[in-house]
Amino acid sequence: MPTERVTEHVSRRLALHAWSATAVVAVGGLLFVLIAPGVGDMWAALARAQAARDGVTLGYWFSWYSGAHPPGGYSVIVPWLSALLGAHLVVALAALAIPWAVALTVTQVRRPIVAVWVATISALLTLGAGRTTFLVGAVIAIGALDAAIRDRRWLASFLVVLSGLASPVAVAFVLVGLGAGFLGKRLSIVPILAGLAFLGVSSWLWGSSGPEGYGWARALISLALLAVFLFANPARPVKVAIVIATFAIVVFSAVPNAMGSNLARLVFAVLPVAVAATARRSNRFTALAVVPSLVWSAYFTAHDLADSRASASSVTVYQPLVDALKRQPGIETSRVEVVADGTHTSAFVLAMGFWLARGYETQADRSLSDAFVDREASISPEHLNGWLRDSSVRYVALNRHPVKRTGEWRTANAQPEGWREVWSNRDWRLFEVSGTKPLIGDGATLRGKSASHLVLNVQPGRGVVVRVRWSSYLHSRIVEEKGPGDASGHPDETPRVILEPSGDGWTMLRLEGSSVARDVELFGRP
Picture 1 (spheres, helix red, strand yellow):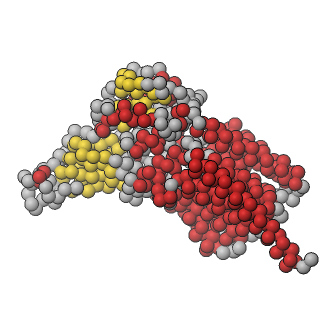
Picture 2 (cartoon, helix red, strand yellow):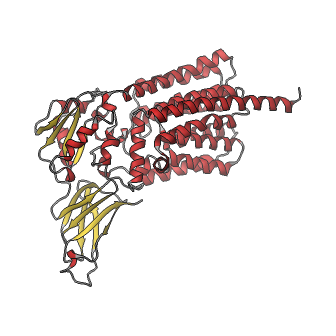
Picture 3 (cartoon, helix red, strand yellow):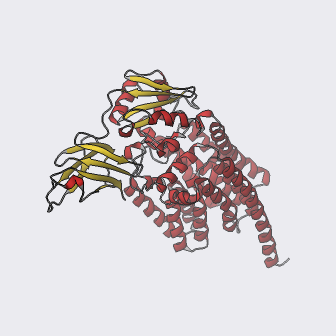
């Protein structure tokens, strides 16, 4: 049979399987959109999409973590895309694109059809866990790898950067693949340099929320699975990628860093596709090499889906709490802490109406205390109270039926000294914490606040401590230049607002050049 006819025959078979795999993902995506399971990562995606609708920029978000962590570090483009289309639809569409993205990339490998189906399984498992930014970034990263393989280095460079704008994790993973190809003298260094430059600029712009743990138990499982991959005898670039991943896991387990356990996705979601595509052993050995990683991925997704069915994950459970919080005195000038219970529903549901002491960023939580994440960790009542009071948290909500009894949950459940229960029902206990420091210091009063801005009426010439984290992305402007409040002011006044960090990391605001109080708006801008 002529070579052209063989190639045509294989391409048609691959296309048939790619369309079949796409149909399977379409069914899974439709179910995901219709059922909308409350998995943890989806709550983060929904919260960030809502924040984008509310005008939150890449530089500052008042509703989460006191404004400490710029939203741009999570994703630059996906929250806006999710705000437009809906987060559930965005992640479903990203998963839908995976089979064909892989099919177009693996046309020259030994087992392209197997690769498409392994990628399909991986996409469905990632979809089930609600990893929106990662799936969007992964689709773009696959395109970058395909462009690099075809020696379209500038297109590959553009797509590498675009994948990073969607997901910092995705760009890190594609750099592993590109690096392996470069070391094998098969790919250009240009896309790698573009990716490294992007990571450098991104780190400079957004910084790090904190360390992401990579426990030794998970690290050892990851290393074992990487070793199992070698049974399939994949192509040399894939072996190089496995070596790079092995080195990274050892380093990331020993040295605190922002990537941490996210690296496990390289093992259970990405490398199985590459191993299956290039395996030079029999189908049996290939299956033995790849299936364990997929099973591990399925375990995580099943765990997330099981948690999403718990009462603590339900949106309806929050409505009585929302109503109770609205009735509490001083709620407008206070933050709310929902005790870590293994779900992240509050990060979306409550952030629409209140300023939260936290949100959902594992790195940010760990930077405060491992007790916000782990069962085994502990936090003393004194430490917890100190953080709550310093963060202007007057109200603490405790779920009676947690999915995970974190260290914070155990401490809060014992009702530390200075806490007074002000409301409860069968699902919640709501406490008021005494001695909380004011959100807005002397010299200013609240006019209004939202996820994207804070408006204060500020007395002139006084330094006012506002308990939002100081940032170079935090800006201010005078709202009213003329109005009733300016009646006694001089018409030639040129008022200005000075923002600077206080000694303990909060924001010091000063109104100068005015003889009367004026309304001042604080807002974020990158």
